[in-house]
Length: 429
Image (cartoon, rainbow, N blue to C red; front, top):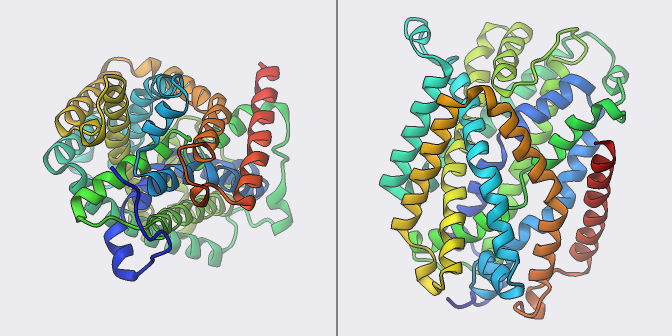
């Protein structure tokens, strides 16, 4: 593999051919962290956590950008960058992926299955449990990916993200025009204060998964190669980063819209909300319908379902793709041999079956598994951020491909903030 040439080249035709990995990253990110965590943030604290949501998206930006910029500058995947920078980087990344992958896939599939019941006809809905639907959806995603591989993922995700952005924007505008469901003034949207010790577990979950865990930087790096193979176009750095920025802008927009929706429709209503993602998602649809009218039910149900379906689909591709490529690197594979379609398919089947097993046989323990995955994602965020910073600023990357002064300052400040929150979390335990 060789680096892309003419890094500053950016054309509409080139961007169209490069467009994909950034959209997929958005599809993976706009899931539990947005539909559940952002909306719960608005429901519990009104607009009090809007600043934190924007801050966490800002400080994670340079670390997630590394996956795209490193590949554009070197022609190597970020996983290869880990291996070449320090020998222990890649094994540590694979351990983090192993600790979080199956639990996260099962969790997002469970929420997707619960939301699917809202879209079924009344005559069919009672015949299928949300768990059965979650397993069926996992099977559908697995067949789709095994049959079409990256092409199916790319095409479907673009359609899903477009539906998601349009439906969520429409729902947000309807809620804003109607006014807060509680009838309270805007000033009441900033109470109660989220900056208390009892609120810390929720803040940890919000920061750990907002907009997504940092291991997803490796996914966008690997998807660049898959997109290149599919389109036959070797994108310039400007084109690849434009794709990333477009997807990232969508994740930030959706995070803000879901928080505002939670604040306008749920905050101050006196209702208690389930901490379980699947049940909360159902409450979300019920309250939107009660607030906006029955006409909004299909709109909200579609927005919520497409949010979680895109996350299920991209996670079922991303976790196995990084596991397959990482293990092949450890076995000495290089170049094109690092990404093997057969090996990737095998790991997708393993992850899909394991997630289905969790849903069918370990449902009572799934909350603990998801909690473990959340803690692992949060606690390792500063470490993965530091690793990404070392790789992009290291000897492998030419000077013009490294982070500039502004992004480097933001990244270093972000490491301080993220490390500080981890220390607070450790002391609180």
